[in-house]
Amino acid sequence: QSALTQPASVSGSPGQSITISCTGSSSDIGGYDHVSWYQQHPGKAPKLMIYDVSNRSSKFSNRFSGSKSGNTASLTISGLQVEDEADYYCCSYTSSISNWVFGGGTKLTVL
Amino acid sequence: QVQLQESGPGLVKPSETLSLTCTVSGDSISSDIYYWDWIRQPPGKGLEWIGSASYGGNTYYNPSVKSRVTISVDTSKNQFSLKLSSVTAADTAVYYCARRDFGEFCFDPWGQGTPVAVSS
Image 1 (cartoon, rainbow over the protein chains, first blue to last red):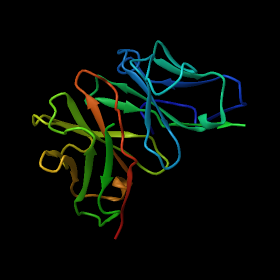
Image 2 (cartoon, rainbow over the protein chains, first blue to last red; image 1 turned 45 degrees about the horizontal axis):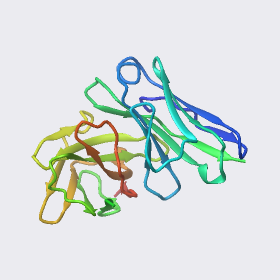
Image 3 (tube, rainbow over the protein chains, first blue to last red; image 1 turned 60 degrees about the horizontal axis):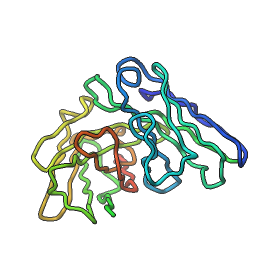
């Protein structure tokens, strides 16, 4: 069981928007603005998409955005494209002795 | 651009030591501005941070493996390594190496990952 909770799967049609949630606690997401998101295609390395809650990596377009409210962070992808189909992971710095916690991952299917 | 590539045995026997290497290309591992991290993903489970090391010799480990893990930097080969002793089936996972900037709270870039199975 992962420290951060993500839905196992989400789906959407090309052109639509989807949001992936990532729920933690006051020790991690709620306590720090250090949430990051990663995209992973099968057999490929995870890629940093979003860091510090809402800062976007230069490798990703403005279709990708991040936000946070309380103990829950969210990743929104607008204008879905087929190539967005991948696994998405959230990560947060934590005050617990484990330093970093991840979500279990969400599989995005673009129908 | 910097690239990371993991290497090592894909099968380790229970109670033995798992040893992996991450080769860094496109950047010097001797830089004072990075941490070099290991992260793993057991089958069907989420990611778990294992630990990190800096060129200056600072190391940080997840308490869940702290008594069994060593991460070190080899500047002569521009590599860093992971050693995990007394492995069990619970250590079966895909192991990733990654870089983290000092003062930053994210991992970028990552290697592609290497699967390691613990089995007799």
